[in-house]
Image (cartoon, rainbow, N blue to C red; front, side, top):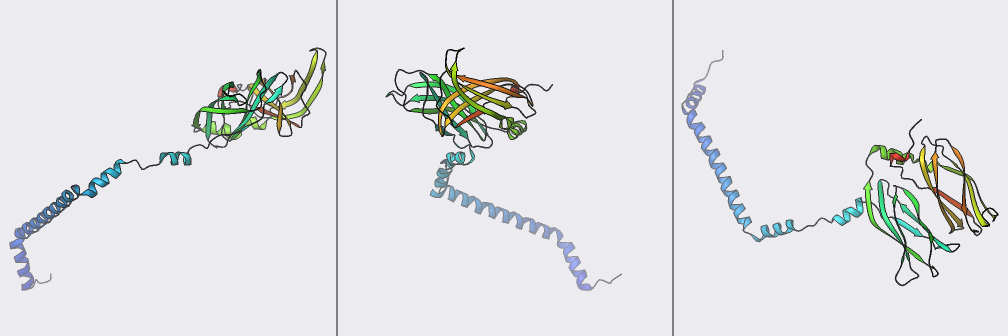
Length: 284
């Protein structure tokens, strides 16, 4: 065992004799330090509280500086794009049609619409309705057989009561990614103009074949038919195909009770709210 020197013995004896005094000294020093810090902090707080800088900061915090409109325009849905076509003269009536487009990838929109007569000073409402647009889609908004006692030269479409809804459910996102309506095929499209002895009038008959190559069967599929002469619509029709089953092909006819001008193409579009599970027939 190592021997303890006389110096080390003296140090140990002194520490043992004054241990309580040393402990008391450190406690008092720590308390005095904390007390000094608290007094200093309290003095600074009181000085700043009664200064003009504190009141100015409080006023600044009370002012709403967040630009919510900016963030809504940045993160929210983009506005609909609407292209209005000139009125279609449909025998003694008018047909009205516009093409609306929703370029948002995950926003569904419901809205109300009104066709206005810009030919009159009071901008008469010609037709009203409600519709929807799925994400990343476009559709026709239309009105048929509008009767007027004056010439209709120009129309406008007013869209209001717009309600946006973000698509969040995975099953809804899945059906939108598949979008079976885009897989529908329309072939053997023909327009025939002739005099019908049965109806005792001249008619235009549109015939085409619709094919549903998807795995889905539908109770009813509304179709919108727009006949074009180059870029101008010259004919408008709407019909519903009922009980369209998966892998089914069907011949369809639509009759206009008058003669349409010469046409360059026919645009046929299904208009179905596929986010509603009730539109699908159950699997057999």
